[in-house]
Amino acid sequence: MDETLVIPLEVEIDEEVDLDIEGYVDPQLNRNYEILENKPSINGVTLIDNKTSKDLGIDQTYIFYQESASSIWTIPHNLDKFPSVTIVDSGGTVCEGLITYPDRNTVICEFNGAFSGRAYLN
Image 1 (cartoon, rainbow, N blue to C red):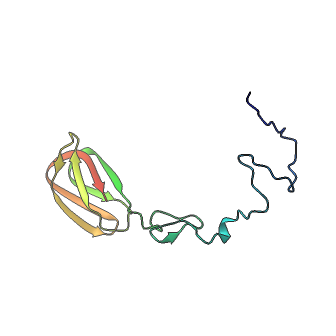
Image 2: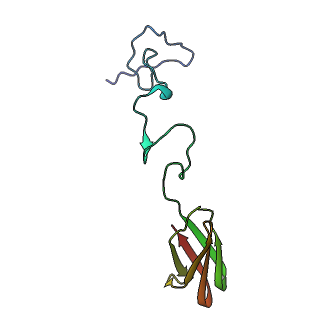
Image 3: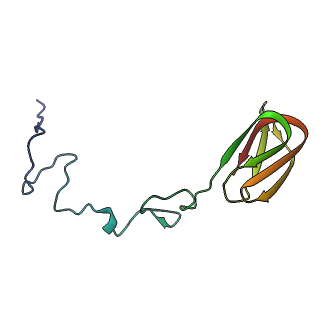
């Protein structure tokens, strides 16, 4: 026969009682994250407070959608870098063109003919 322990929600657990119930935190153990000696980290950045992918050194990407056919695509991406660029037309074919970087947050792509598609920036 299966034995099940049922604890009503109104019952307060006495700190002196030694219970082995899933989810119970022993008040004698310190569960304060801030005093952990071995905090997790990503790319050498310790995970404390709110971190962005840039703070953590995780590479950022951006997908630009060129909805109307054009031979010049101006792509504001705000990645704060000079990303690699892959252009794909609306049919899924990778296309080549002239790629220029007027600044760290903008890419300009020039092509021989006008078409729509996507630019994948990394």
